[in-house]
Structure formats: C-alpha cells, structure tokens
Length: 507
Image 1 (cartoon, one colour):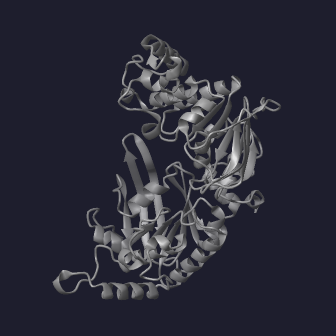
Image 2 (image 1 turned 180 degrees about the horizontal axis):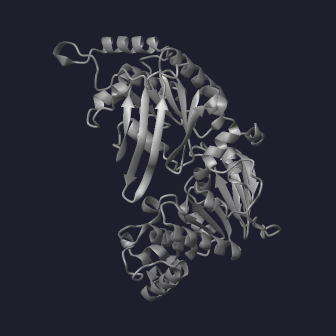
Image 3 (image 1 turned 90 degrees about the vertical axis):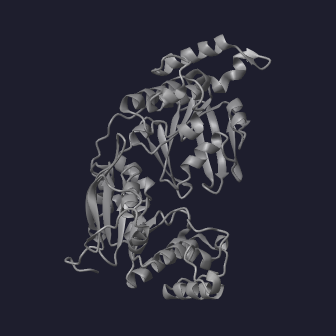
C-alpha cells in the first residue's frame, strides 16, 4: 500500500456540476492513491455518474478542480492527453463486435507501411505484445463478439493501458457476470494492481467492495459523505453512510395496514425468466401496491415492462384476472387490463406534437366513437375529466403537451394509464424528474388506485415512492432475494438492494 504522504494519482475537490436548475453534484470529492482499488458507492442519483464524467474529461465542472499526479487536468478539448490519464470501462462494452481484438485495440491508430496502408502483420504483433504485457489471454485475431463478457472488458482495459493510462474506472463491471466470472475479474484486477494500475470501482453490490477494494468513498444526495479504508468501515457503517440514517435505529414510522390481504389475486406470475431476470414468482392482489426495488442491473425494469407488453420472457407464465397475460404486445396488454406509466415520458410516454387531450385519451379511443370515428366532444369531455382528476395545470385539452412543465407532463402520462380503468397499473419511476408538489400529487393518484381496488406494481429508485407500498420485493442479479413488508427502514431496504446480507449489517 502507498504511504500517507504519497501524491494522489487522482484528486477531485469541490466539484459542482449543474444542468439547468438541476444540481447533479453539489460537493464532489475524491482522492485516489497510486496502486489501490478505490470504491465509489452511493444510491442512484447520488452523483457517481456525474463525478465520473468530470474525472474522465467528458464534462467540465462548474466549480472545483481535478488533478492527476498533482498537476491540473488537461483541457477538455485535448482528448489525447485525457486518454493518457484515465479511461472508463462501462457496463455496456464500447468495443466494435464485428472487428477483431487487434483492430479494436488500435482502432484509428493502426500501424501503416508502404503507401500508408495498414500493416496487418505489425498490427497483430503489436496486439499480441500488448495483451502479453498485461497478461490478457485473448486471441488477437478473434472477433470481439465471440468473446466472453469478462474478456471483452479486459480488452477494453488493455486498450486504455496502451495509451499510457494507469487509472481505470470500472463502472458496474460485474453486472453481466456470474460468480465464477466475477472472481476471475477480481483476480485480474489484483494482478494489474501489482503491475501499477489503479482502479476506481463503481458497484451497487457492497460485498464486492469488501472483496476487492482498499478504500471507499460514499456520495449521498450529490455530496461527498466520507472516505475511509474498507477494513475500518463495517457494513453497518457503510449502509448508514449511504442511507443517511443509523442502522441501529429501530423506531419505525407509520406502518400501512395491508387492506388487500384476502382480496382476489389480480396478477399471478410463475417462473418468469428472461435475459434480465430468472424464476420470478410474483402476485399482486386487488387494492395492493407492490414495489420492485434493485440496482440498475437487477432486472426490475425489464420485469415490470414485461407485464406491460414491452418484452417477451423466455420462460414462465403470467395471468391477469385468471386469464393468460399476453407478452410482447403493448396493445394486447392494454386490452387485457394493464395500464402503464413507462420509464421515460419523453421517449415512451408522450407524443410531443399532440395536445394534452390527445395524449390523455390515446388509450381509450375505441370508447369515444363508433366504426372507427372518434367523437370530438366525447374526447374533450373525457380529457377534461382526466385533467381535473389529475390536477393537470393546463390551458385546456387543446394545449400542446410539449408546453407543459415536467410534473404536469408526467400527470398526462398517468392520466392516460388510468383512463382505461386498468385492473393492473404498472408504474415505472413514476415521480422521476418532477417537483415535490407534482410528486405528492402523482403518489396520491397511486393511493387512489389502490383504494379503487386496482392492483398496482411500482418500480422506483426513489425510497419515498416505495414507502407507499404494502410490500417491496428486491431483485439482485435478476433474482428476487428479499421481501420487505410496509414499515421497513431505509438501511434494511438498501442493504438488500446492495446485496448485503441483512445479518452482516450488524457486523
């Protein structure tokens, strides 16, 4: 390990980054010493991605500074200089699948011979030498698409090292790996550390932090919270830093009484399996709100979208009101009784060129006329009722939806989901990017749906959304690993989301 007086390889101080009125990072700090694996953890929205964008030169901070080896970071426009300092290996590979390993390693800088033509012999040799230097056992002539995920990641690391960078950011590197692949990756990381490579390790799985990292930095609510040696920080203390509340605190707030107990099951899923999740059993009763929680790669989004007709699982069944739920067909799911607020209102939820009324009534046009003709007065009447019911601040049904604020636009998406009087309401990040008042209004609509006897399935990264649920299921690596009844404490849910055994939080 480095001595305390070693000049940091990377140091970020007082980083502030704003995107319009949104403060993505209010106080970002990071000090990484040479040769260590340093973990960066925090819940979704804590500011990790923003800090990485600043550290890798993709964004300039509005305030604060980044230094490498004690020197100021390069100018944002000097990409070659940034490549020599730092590289990021993302969860989704950035290699080109159809090219060979050698071509990916030296893309846009292939060795040339006579007539400035690419020298394929030299390219293969340079690739073999590079892979050999860093002990990466991959065939330089193999097509990258044929490699295992872990080998693609090592190719990306080798490419970064070939520029001279010795600081590698690994962003959720284990999200697509099984346990054996994860252990092989960690073994390779330790070997690279011994060769002088430094890692910033970003993961939602806290047990991995304890396996492979020496130091951890915690961000919460866009601010630096703490940096400490991993060996000196218990799991309980780490979860507490992320959650912002003491793990030892047992006093609970108001616990919702599950009125739905004993009511008929509306959604009954058995053994649902896909590339994103496996062997999921799930029931939602009428008048019950069930939450799905998990990290970004847990499969929770894909599972919820499956019920809304956006995906087709490879195995398992689901019934809605005792009838088989159609998969892979949004219109068929709507006809079966599913209403959905999708994860992205701009891309999936709204038609920007249409009016508020058109967007709100899109799911019930068949009820507003006969023989394919829609009654304008009927549509205006239904739209007006939805606008009043959802408290949408608009000049009227004819106002372009593009003119609305984010909160009111999201209310239009909710209005359309409720317009069909669904038996199952699927809400995916329903309050993302809206103001506090709009959030309260949207959650009140969820409560109203529950009181009306609707089965509600809500997926959210916001703990305040999940607090309204009768119970919350936690997915980890595609499997349901925990169920929390209403009244859970933040640290309990976060420990499950991050893959920390509940008993270990008291260690």
